[in-house]
Image (cartoon, rainbow, N blue to C red; front, side, top):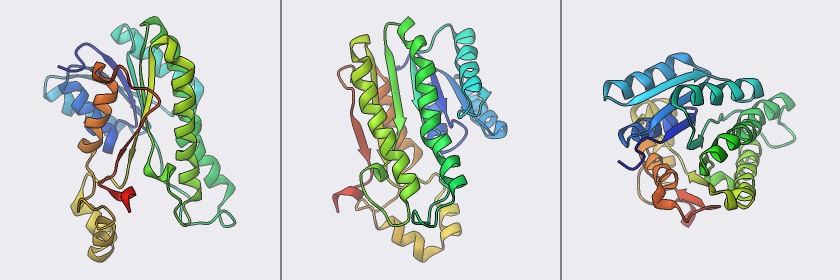
Length: 252
């Protein structure tokens, strides 16, 4: 098992990439603590893991609040004795479809709180636990949106660009302490293609799929396996790297 006895905290673990990664990590022997604001989805993820004899628990957390982030890590360390890996995954997608002149200030604040400030808080407060272990791994869910400009996506893309620079600076700051920091940069990931087509309609759905030369959208598992590599000792000489997982999207 690639993560045997490792203790992992995953934000946004109730759905999508976070859920897929939590399930995979548990299969690989990790003890998984997931966090998010919706208890129902967190509980579902934990039940899936436990039904397959994995080890998992959850803490309902608003990761934009420092006291709740501290409690998340304290609870994890109290339960499992340590923390080895943080997957900074949680994000929201709001306020897009506007250029900067149309963007509401409250939408800016809401998205930045979760997509950038929360990543800062989780990183800040996990570092002491990783230091106690003489090292560890932090992985961010970034996006290809950090690297390409898209019309009327200034809010989301700006936040993801900030994630990339935060990751690189942290990788330099903590490399001597054996704390590795990397990111994954997916294109369009969709766990439920039937629902995706229902929400977008067949024509728009097909247009979105065709943006990816491989001819399909990504799945949470596509990203989870990349995160697994960056979390495991197999990537012990990898830090400050952005791993693009996009079905060829950015080749065009």
